[in-house]
Image (cartoon, rainbow over all chains, first blue to last red):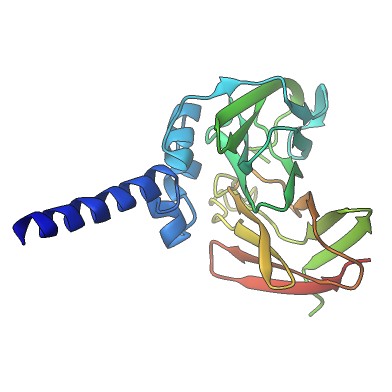
Amino acid sequence: MQRRTFLKGSLAGSTVAVAVSAGLLSPRSVLAAWPKGAFEAKSMQDALSGLYGNASTTPSGDISIKAPDIAENGAVVPVSVSSKLGGISEIAIMAEKNGQPLAANFKLSANAQGFVSTRIKMGKTSDVIAVVKTNSGTFSARKNVKVTIGGCGG
Amino acid sequence: MASSIRIRAKASGAETTVKALITHPMETGQRKDKKTGNKIPAHYIEEVKCDHNGKTVVTAQWGPAVSKNPYLSFKFTGAKAGDTLTLSWVDNTGKTDTETTKVG
């Protein structure tokens, strides 16, 4: 009897652990809350760990960032990210030297393509970083954008 | 009041491209009013959700670093002409707006 209880308990425990590691039960998706900490983070590492729970990314050539080489107006910098990587679940766009680097994060469902486009503000010349989260890891790519007039002071 | 959202979805083959423009000030909370010197309070969209026939396709989480009157575009598969697409946003003051369109 005791052995049976023990087996049941351990089985249930491991199922939960598997679900957590697969990202199915991460606190963020359960609450579906806006990741305040990630957006308020002052560094890219903090923003990434706040967003994905892990700050390490692998540079990938399969992510392309379309952004101007020189942005005359930092208040409106068009950025498109496309990727051919499989199993994409999220795409984040960051401007490395912004006070709060994380600009946007897109959660994509299974039938969404690896493409998002938006416009962001950039305080000064900096790298724009695209972080793509897939089921096989987190990948990133960067592109330098020169900003002649900053967009954060107004 | 007219809707703050302009959205267009175009199906081409298996792929549908969605483009949306939202009218919103997207204040960062760091800008100062030039006349009074007071800070303009932060006012920005936190979340944009796009549903295709009731099923969420993309959820965008935005910070104040997204430009004023934000533009958003993405692509997805599995839609056909005539399907409904709903886009809604919520900002940090709790305001919200929704707009529905048909895939063309």
